[in-house]
Amino acid sequence: MLRVPSPVPSSSVAASSTSSRRGAGRWVAVVTALLLGLLVSAVGAPAAAAHDTIESSNPADGATVATVPASVTLTFDEQPQDFSPVIQVTGPDGADWADGTPTVSGTDVSVPVKAGAPAGAYQVAYRIVSSDGHPVTGELSFTAEAAAAGSAPVSSAPVSSAPVSSAPVSSTATSSTPAASTPSSSAAPSSSAPSSALVSPAANASDSGSGVPAWLIVVIVLVIAAGGAVVAVLVRRARGGSNAA
Image (cartoon, rainbow, N blue to C red):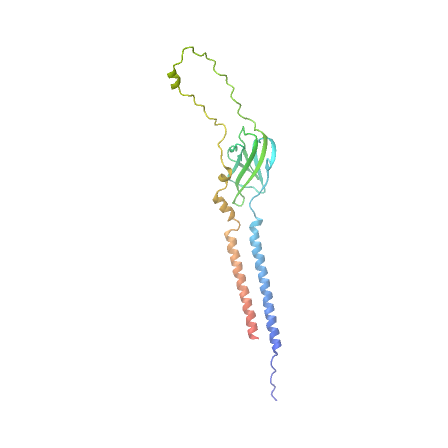
């Protein structure tokens, strides 16, 4: 007698198809998790290598000191690049009392303060080039209870005691004699706006766009593309297994 093979139960086919789909789904979940992990680690890498940040200052931010200090020093967590650092020390009169170009020594960036700086509230604005090559800006403040040493004393030169002529003064001569011009004081430095001078639109643009380098973006795109290809292959295999069943 000929034996006719019994048909495969539909329940077995359905179970096999379901098992294949579950296996494909697990692979998709694993690959997706790996891709997300790579993406998070890649994006988090620039955050780990963040720009230099200020750790302390002398005078400290918000401090009240007895007199205006001879210099202002900023201390960062990493050594900044010695590339055109800027520190402006704006006094209560609106003038910049910083004296010359700041110097970089290790993690410290300092600038002298001009003699004769008045007492009052001061704003310190800075712009340095971080160790990773990107500009870093910031502000802090302090208050001085007394002016800096070296204030220019008020002139005490005696007034000339030459005798006054008793001759009558002509009204014509009096009216034609020009009044003596009073020279304006040039001791105080000119006023400047620290915020606009330090932070330019170009600097802001470089700060905001410098978080992720170009090579890292390329790596992320390649990883996502590779992950998409793996997911597509797994899905096709799962569909092929279900169709064959």
